[in-house]
Image (cartoon, rainbow, N blue to C red; front, top):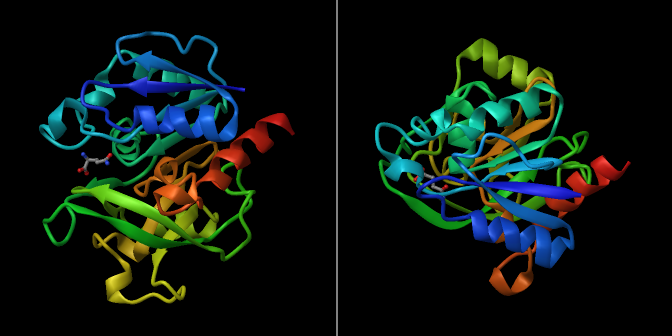
Length: 230
Ligand SMILES: NC(=O)CC[C@H](N)C(=O)O
């Protein structure tokens, strides 16, 4: 399976994504420059984290106009998998591939730390490798990670089982301290309506081997491979 990893000016997690896919997962990956106009046969697109266009205007607001995004939108419309991590999640929301928006953290501070997430739905091509309700440890690193959407959209996301990751405390409980950014309903990751685009603020590609603090992110990449091979 071929993963196409989009590099925007200011991306800084593209190499981490490559490492996760190639060195840990044993699959193929290549970089796609944001000015490219086709996906060069990628089966899965990764929109990686970083600071595209220096986070000017709003995170992701400029990158969403990069030429490659038309091809990414067409791929998503065909049902192709897109994994949008952190800045990638912001870009995907700006591009309308996912509902809602990411605003500045409630604290107005950049946060960079390990966090616990609960896997809310394992019935997806991104989470089938987890067990329902599993608590995983995945790092976050963002200044604009507060997920917001109107009440009807949030209800639809919840009702459809499209909230796949939620911030929780270490024991799995929800309390104010479990939520690092003020995201509504403690949302950390969501699916689009066709369930082929996942946006999440935490970084699974930085959690693929215990030596970096956690290997809990690897199952997400394994899920994608399982889904496409199935
Ligand atoms: N790690 C990231 O992708 C950071 C995203 C974005 N630059 C922010 O600070 O919110």
